Amino acid sequence: MINVTSPAPKPIHAGGRRQVYYWKCDRPHAFHGTGQERDTAAVEPLLRQQLEACYPGRAITLRDAGGQGNHLTWRVEIDEQQLFARIENGPERDNHLQIESHVMARVRACGVPTPEVLHVDTRRSDVPFAWQLMDRIPALDLNAVQKAGELRPEDVAFEIGEAVARWQSVEVSGFGHFQEEAISDLDSLVGFHARYRDYFFLNWEKHLSFLEKTRFLTASESIAIRDAIHDANDLLDLTSGCLVHKDLAFWNLLGDRKGVVAYIDWDDAIAGEETDDLSLLACFHEQATINRVIAGYRSIKPLPQEFDNRFWMHLIRNLVVKAVIRVGAGYFDRTDRFFLIGAGMTGADLMQETRSRLFRALDGLVANTRVAPCQDSPHFSSQSAPIEPTSFTTKR
Image (cartoon, rainbow, N blue to C red):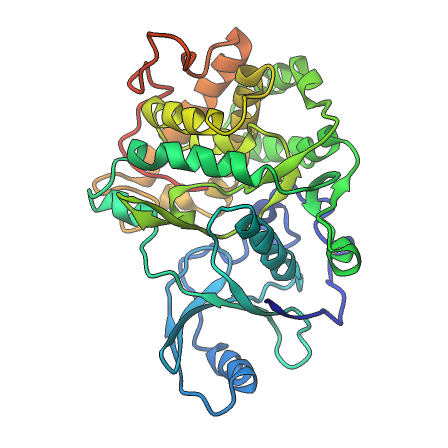
């Protein structure tokens, strides 16, 4: 049972995430929390006060967890109980931790493991931040396991595909980010938008213009991307949506080579389209892994009609967003000390990889290329021709 303390003050940004395609780049204070310096010491005493109020008389220990996302994070021990705390302290006063906690409970109920949230408080009445406390899973994220050379992505890919298919059974309505009021009043996951295309094209021109202005894309490249998406936009006429994690990557999966023990960080979850989460994995992994993910998905439910073009279309959309974040947050200027860049690689390599995958997706959509061979074919192999080889792990 989640101990939810409902928000009193409204967020500064009117309408919640109604006008947000992806929070990290579309929030009013874009790229907040993506810098290299994270000041947890300033707010840790306030978090301790909140925990002491919830657990009076208990021995509480806090250790900075070194999170590099847009939340501040701590490892928490309360007596001998191992927990994990997250803080949202952005200037927008975003209340999404409450929505995320609800989503995680729904996902866990459909058979996909997520940490259990014990407390979430988004009021900001006593402290200037929203906070969340959950069980700490005793496992590393799969990105760390892979970078240590202890995991081949295709070893866990099948079960990831199964999990995606299972969480798509969670009931949602509308499209896009979820409305806080619907969760509070109706216990329902209701997206802000009646039409999927309205969500898909949120800030689309803004994203492309930013990439042109910063010279990640040339004008002709941007036009080619616009034209390809325009020509395929009838694929956006959906009658219903499904739950989409929207940040599905190995750093948001806990486990080891034996399998995934928890799917975490549902902060960006939306009501969206069936191929979206599958395409997200192709932002980082080779075809052998994607084939196994697709096979796992198909073991639970069939692929949607026109799967290939839907997949390429959403891969383009996701890579455009990741390029905006990587440019805007300065990821292309970092060294291999940054956890998103593999040993011996540079930020320039990350930029080249991002562009390569983007234009491979563009070619796939324009040429109507098969994403993977048919699983029913006797020639199906997890080692089929790659989408685009990659030699290092990337994020966002």
